[in-house]
Image (tube, rainbow, N blue to C red; front, top):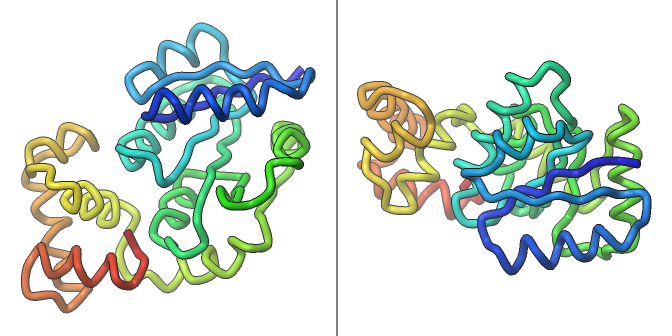
Length: 201
């Protein structure tokens, strides 16, 4: 039996994905929102953490999942649902140690097989995401700079970003300044615009 903790910010999508995955008798699926990841993992450590890089608050969700996995004695493997045209998200997932990359627009028939493969120590990447993952290496922004800029793009304040990513306000400002410099932007909004156009956010 493979235990999966599905983390998603949207209740309806979370329930739908859980229902789809639970159709396989060898998968034990539990769910959590971003605030319940640690409690769910401590109650019953999962073999796999799974999240959607496109869900609302995806940066915060991935940050929390990464923190929980790293603090656990035997942290489960990370699988992400992703899009190939968003190399910034793929890079964040790669830096978080993801071992499985599933195209969220692909067919659902092999999901359970991928879960078992990754739980057994293997790796998986859908062919449609491979080029996006290669392009992720070309993104000039670091994973932290991408995370900070992604939250800024959602309209979050420096204080809120600092709290979400467990950073100081000064460090957040430094990351924003670096993102502006590396993108050749005029200001924060211009950096967000350019990064979005290039698919980094």
